Length: 139
Length: 398
Image (cartoon, rainbow over all chains, first blue to last red):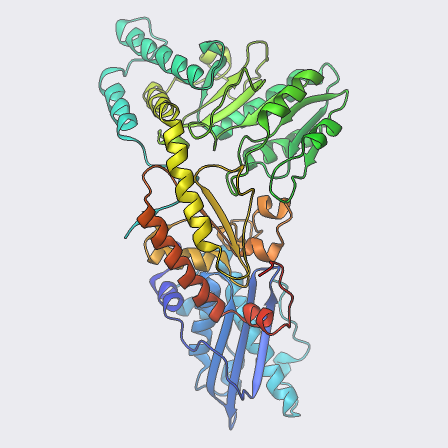
């Protein structure tokens, strides 16, 4: 299907890191069923490194593919590196998304940010500057 | 296996329709408006096609058929003609439903901007409009009622004969968008008191880019396309005789075999409806009986239609979805939400539309694969997880 790139279709057909982490150190969920998109990310963090990550997504093909790609991009990275993940980098890693699907990648970035906020908050740590006052986008 | 189950989007052309198209391209290429014999031979083919289309919907006269570029143009012209034609008589009110095709809804919106008032009727939960609501909506200044024959998304068939009789008794023009019904359901414009009716060739195995507007003699048409005097001066543009003749052949084929086709196709439809009914928290959208022979529209809670559609496509199954993610607007189907289907359920909808080429084996394959994809995507849906553990409430009963 030419709507999506081969990379998008690959991540849709064989999504990486699907599932839940039973004893996750942080969880981030964004979206709602009325909008038709929900992403939930689970992080395992060790010495400020994301050692494991899982996701569950309710949404279209590109929502699933962007979740999958986003988890791949930050798995094994430090929290600071994960903070730098942008929706643009997810889109680029997927060789592009149709214009009207770019919001899916924003959702993926937001889900990770919400998970990171959960981690810092749970551990009584100060939020990095870029996360202070962060609100996920209205889908 | 490759299964084409999206015949409501478009059909493949029949062999007879293809043959007629080629025959016309080779032998009837003249402009029917030309006086030389090439033109006149083509004119004869055009006359024959017009008569065929008239016969298929029981129009009183062939000259009540106006060929157009398709269903959308016919819809546009019907509404604009009724509105602008009757405005001078002080009739500035139009009635339609909120589940029409956008060719109707967007034209209505345009007319609203021109100062017309439009009433949008809301159907019952089964997708069918109440006759009483139509009656109550008709006013002294109502120019037109436009209600689709059968819905393209969820297949519900409207009480067209009853609405036609009502409109006639009230002296109001009645138009019906019969794009999904033509060649699939019996149409009799005289018995059903239909003043105007739209059809589209590619929905019944004819070519794309061609359709027709039936307008009963006495209904004044307003041009949408200005230019030459083709189509009794009501639709300019060199007449696409090959496509028109091909469409007429396809329509005739469909009408001649309608009874057997309806029997065969509705059996496939009911087999799929039955086969999907054991999926928990799913529902059939649209009336189970008063529906197009080939239409199945199902909602599955907790999953999103586009992902189901994409995965089914990988299995070789072509269908469509009312999910927001399959639309340009990012809004879910206005038809499903318009008849009261919760937005969450509209997101998780799939439409399968069958025709005579489909088989029981194909339906069984669809049943198997839909079970598999719904299970797969529910398994990775945080929304489904919340429904399962009671964090969110189901909107579809088990």
